[in-house]
Image (cartoon, rainbow, N blue to C red; front, side, top):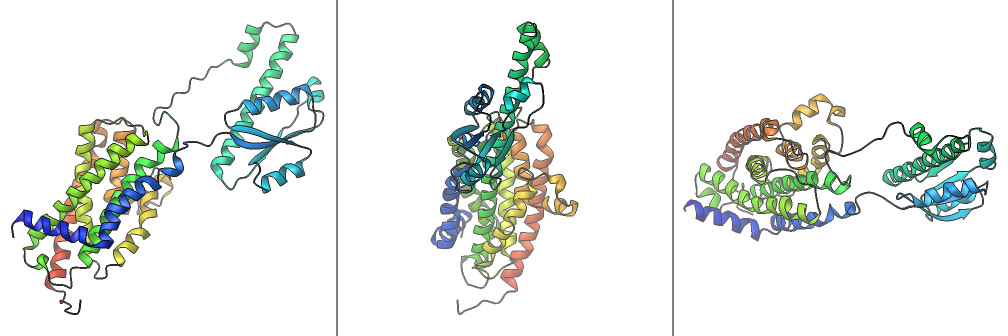
Length: 383
């Protein structure tokens, strides 16, 4: 059996196995829709709030108009008191409320401090943060307007007042993720994690189902089997990776700053090292159901160890060290720097070499693991 015939046998074994085919082809397509879907709206806007206007004055109505004009808020109702406002939040009719106290205008005219009360449903921290940020901005802008009119009444010019109220102009330009959305923030890393995990599961199920049976995998040398298996999965996952990094990033409008050639060069050791890690991973099991369970179990630790949803500095040092042995962790970090943050190749080349080193380590582990399974494990004729 020549090398390409062996690759063809490997491909037939993959597509004819329902569990592997569903995991690889179905899973990659399914997750390309499932994961980005919650983030398509990017950031929460126009969160519904109710207002308790205890003052009912021109200044309180000004504050309410500022709230209505805020892109983060939508004033849906006026209620009589705090109890009704809390009931509206509890009933899901609004996510937050603003309370303007009685005597608001009177105290301001007497240059006495006043307190605007905010409240919101903190079960969803993104919604709560949007409401809090919107209402704080409303309070600041309303305060500036009142100061502005007060200083004008004292005889200062508009230009002088403007300089006093805004002595420093802040020009905020995000260096990365210019849309400040969650799609560009979450989707690139999650898609790479999906590729990593499904590749581990696919190779794991394939190997675990073969070690105790007769088949083409026992009719070729160990080197041929390793090369053909890694080559077959690498070809399949090159297509999947191109679909994710190319089409999905374009379709979901993910910010991309990397050079195509450098991105492809960086992903090469990722596919090879993960394929070899998957073959080594498969030698740990003789039951087909276990690779999936273990891969799912380690998915969340890998996600957090990757550093884009949780600060790596808050993860214990021993776990950080162990995570450096996982190709997915190294790849997510490197790809986010290279493709999303526009890092130069020299700044990520150490991660690229680390992936090649992992490929070498997993090649050795895969060799000895598969050799043990093929030479030592007895053949179960009942299967």
